[in-house]
Image (cartoon, rainbow, N blue to C red; front, side, top):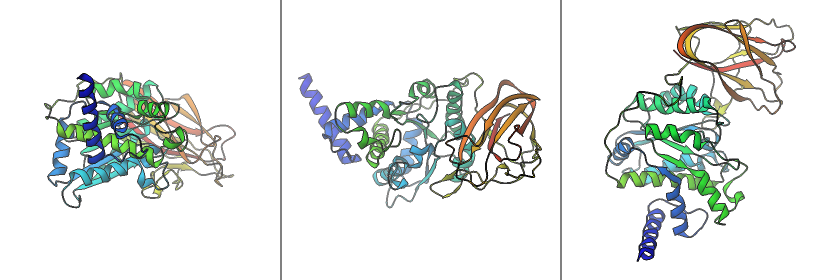
Length: 411
């Protein structure tokens, strides 16, 4: 009897997955595929926010879906980036739940190749909230294959989650842990997601299991060591749709408040991006007076994602005046560019000083660069204090270039 019930349950689940939303791109047995999709959902969390967002979609109300992450979110892997999981999910969500042509559902893909959650935190307000023109109704956060396991990335991941939840009672955050052949950092992120009771989907276990059982090969899921094929992206979309279907069928949970205390000590919640007109920051550009137009670009716009930056151009006659910034803060995130080796302007090393003390040297021209961003946490304290930050080209690099791509701070 137990075996019969189990078989019936799998068949029902398989029917639901195959008819409601799943595409079964690997042509597996439907029951196996349904089980795989179901297993990816490691926690539904508190469904109050997500269920309300689904109801808004059904009623034809204006809804914004946003995805913040790295290259997997941006759509790397398939021939067309618009076949990435985030775009597929947006299309599937509209088709399944929105009335009419689904014009009430809007989408903003804020994925950016090679970037960790520390840079995602700096970008969140400008690249998600400002682009949407509001706080998103559903926010997917995907950095599990870009972040390391260090405490810094726990802080930045939590900062995104906490800020999104606190900014609006309507924003439902989904933690999506993508898979890579080298693993992911789901274990470091899960305690934070558990604290905030947000839904969690982990692709790593089901991908490894699918390969081990011969449902698909590594080459059928990955285009390299991290980016999924179009079939892999479809599986990710189906896992997200399974979450939505699960929540849609469930009773609504009671509303919960955002925890008063952060998971991480000296957290990064409330981070603000720095621009020249910030009245709380005094900047003297020194030799960093140009704007670098070759910073990382986003696929959806084919344009620089950082049009406002501080660049010291390569110049054989240039002086080496430091970039100086006076700021009162608890935390400071510093983002610099690693110049592509093919570029005509050659980049060098810059020394970073905080309150007169040299704390780091960053190489903007190191091997393997492709105009990519590197984000580092320069300051992280319990209390807000006045600081002076200087960026000065290192000995031997005085005539070379360097770009401060972006900065963000917690007051």
